[in-house]
Length: 145
Image (cartoon, rainbow, N blue to C red):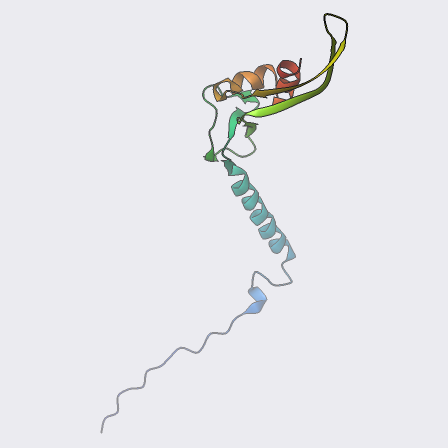
């Protein structure tokens, strides 16, 4: 009787923890890996921008305003550390002014309360950013009497 030859299996491998990346003897490698991971997360986080409904954005690249239509609502991809997006609320705004006093024709004191509803047009956002700045500046300069 001929027996079939026995197959030889390689010896089982053992895990060599002395050369592992997470070895306590490599704190520099762990620090570098942590910094690279943190940098990657920051880059990924600052690459994507979400504008909510009722918002529009004006893109600035290296400080100069990009001409054209502003960015609408939704997901946008921008260059991190180079681009900045100024967000504006383009819904109808309400501004209330209380305690306006004036004199009537017969010199009676009149106290008035005024409510102004206004809305910034998205096509004018580039000009607003360049000429006025923020929406608070628009309110102070154009809406309040």
